[in-house]
Amino acid sequence: MNILLLGATGFIGSNLINNFYSNLPKNVNFFLLKRSPDSTPRVSLLKEHIWVDTIKVKDKKFLKDIDLVVDLSSHSTNPPYHSYDECIYWNVYQKSIFVNDAINAGITNFIFFGSCFEYGHSANNYKFIPENASLKPLNSYSLSKAM
Image (cartoon, rainbow, N blue to C red; front, side, top):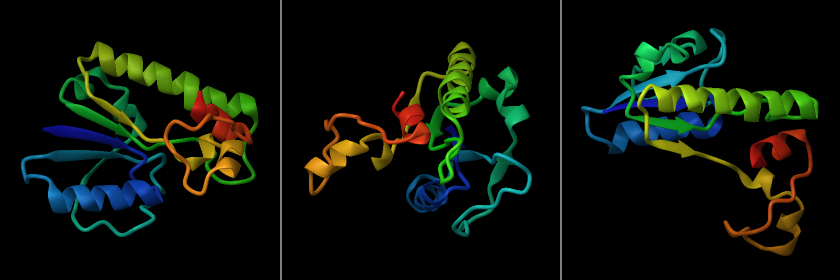
């Protein structure tokens, strides 16, 4: 099985990939996307891995060999957040183009991760935010993720 992990250099992504390496069969291949050549994982990875860049991910021949896309990626995750237009462009528009390309390449399995930020103001109503809480984002990043 070939898994493409978007957002592998982030805190959650690098921890998730270490968990995958420790708990999944050895015949699972991970292809990890990094935003730029200078990107490094927030957490040291336990094993050598296959890094791919955005150009390869846009290659339909490469995508035909992927069985599952796990998406933890996002644009403008830390303050100061970029404009609404820029966050929506990257987190909604460009992501939908990628998903469409992946579907056209034959990928049928996707896992998309969110975070507590999409809930925004709803967090004030709970000690622990349930999955079915209303989405009431507070800024450009959280709005684009909710979209």
